[in-house]
Length: 250
Image (cartoon, rainbow, N blue to C red):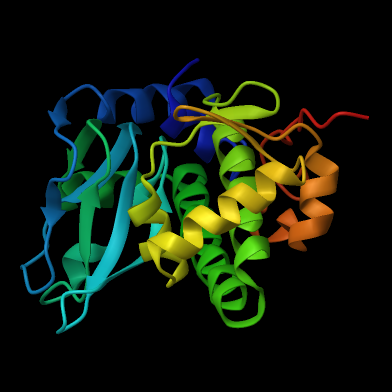
C-alpha cells in the first residue's frame, strides 16, 4: 500500500525521490496508541505534531453537559495540526477511535521539513485542504438533512482513503460506532440508526460489519450533493502531484 503520508503529500507538490526519502525517514519512529485514547486534550500545552500512519483519529470538543461534537476525522497520512506548537494551549482534543499507529514530530523536525520548498508547499496544501474540509462540514451540518449528511461523509471518506491506498474500489472500512456518527452529525443514536436503515433500504450503501460498500458511487454523490473539489485531489496545471484515479463505476 505504501506510506500514506508520502502518498498524500504527493498530491500537494511534485516531490523528488530525495524528498520522499526525507518523509519516509520522519515515519521511522512509530508508536501504537490504543483505541479511545486522547493524544492531546483541550487545555494542554501542545508541542509535538501527531502524524497518523494507520488507524482512525478524530478532533473533538466536549460541552459542559458532557456531549461531544466531533469536528474532523483524520485518516492514514494526515497530520493533526502542523504548526500546533505555536499555540499556548489546545482549544480542542484529539483522540483515537481505533488502535492507531502514530508518529510524533517535534518542532525542529517540522522546521527542517518546511525548509524544503517542495515539502513546504505540500504541507501548506494539506493545511489548506483541512480548512476546505472544515468549511464543507459546516455546510453539511448547517444545510443538509441527516441522510445527505451521512452520505456526504461516506463519499468523502471513500475518496480520502482511496487517495492513500486504504480503500479498494467502492468499499472501505468504517471503524465508527453509531454513537460516534451521532457525535459527528449532531443527532441522536436513534436518528443515526434510522438514517442508516434508510440508506440501506434505498440501495445507497451496504454494510457488512465495519465494511461499507457504495454500490453506485455517482448515485450517492448526487443524493448527498457531494462535490469533491474541496479535497483538491485532481491534477491541475500547476506543480502538483498525480490525480486520484477514482474507481467509480461507469
